Length: 213
Image (cartoon, rainbow, N blue to C red):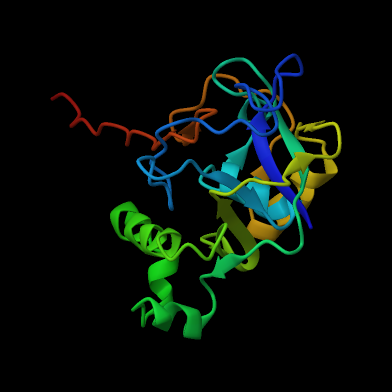
């Protein structure tokens, strides 16, 4: 199966080194991380889903959006994984019931403690290489995390991302984000300011002063 992820790419790095296509940082705290048991390689079923997971929290995409804080440009990577891998499908109601989950909305909630506990229960069954679920940004966007990475490899040269990339346009259409093609100048007082890591600062309301008498 063909899968995708977005990374701050370093062409000089080996696949499993920082900046490489298969690099997994230790001690993660994301949706299904349990670093005392395993490390997770997060992947997506489509390029649009990979883009949404990386940049979805940023409402306005500018040229700076696609440059990591380290200075490396973000790139879309294409990964090949065996079709036969066993993934726990978190959109399968019967599967969820088998581990005591009766409300599928629990899957997309942002309570990391609960989703990590769920992942731990799945891992401890010993039957799965990871889990898949629908993205917070849309039920048609499938994402997954794998703790067993046997047979996973990169199959294409990563595609550097810019505001004119076709995949950027497709992703912005899929999750309704605005693209600005010119570098941002200092934001006006009434504009929301967003950094490359997704931290957005709301505009400060103008002060109202009574006229002097």
